[in-house]
Image (cartoon, rainbow, N blue to C red):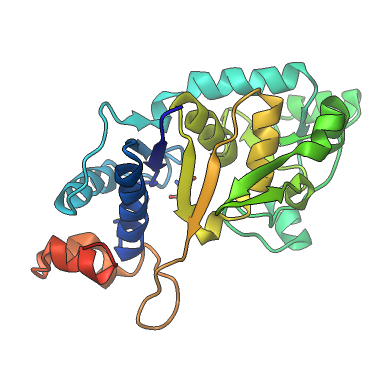
Length: 276
Ligand code: GLU
């Protein structure tokens, strides 16, 4: 497989210097390997994603000097693929409907975006209770049934692992508990969509921030269950703001739009981030 990597932002705000660093890191790796650089729009969360942010993203990345393959894949247009993947897991009994409310789960554990915070372990409700919950129209999440996954994968479970930053790491999917892969009327969580699309796009190297360094522990399990290849993973350090905290989309002064408006030259920004 030829080297292929991607930058996969979610248009829930303006890109900032941290995103620029991430995109440049992946872009430089693709250049160095003579491989492909893919931009993917992860706009699953339609409540928070806005077209205005998406348009700004394209402008910012072009301003930064990046080029990418077209057409650009948008996750909001691929729901049928995620639904089909989910259905495969449902058919094998590898996911179950979990009716616990967010409040209940938050009370049980500290939550972290895409992280192992929601380490819920559970099991399907007895059929009659589930039927009545469905009749009442209660919301639910489709959660991976970890014990069943272990049974189905048998000896392969112990071989689950991935290459991260050049070292082989044995996967520990249990740290995520029974991860949410989809919700009622919504066929994909970040985990399912991202894993599915990395495979669909032939991504050989996932290069992203250290904030997602735990994700492969779960992603390799999803890959094994859906017969998808496992890419190599690389994690780069996060860019910090003047206050020493990692940048967030709310840090307006650090957004690429603001830097652009203030007359910053793209070459100066690239230099500042270590990409001359
Ligand atoms: N869309 C994710 C984010 O913006 C990136 C996920 C990934 O690179 O896998 O946090």
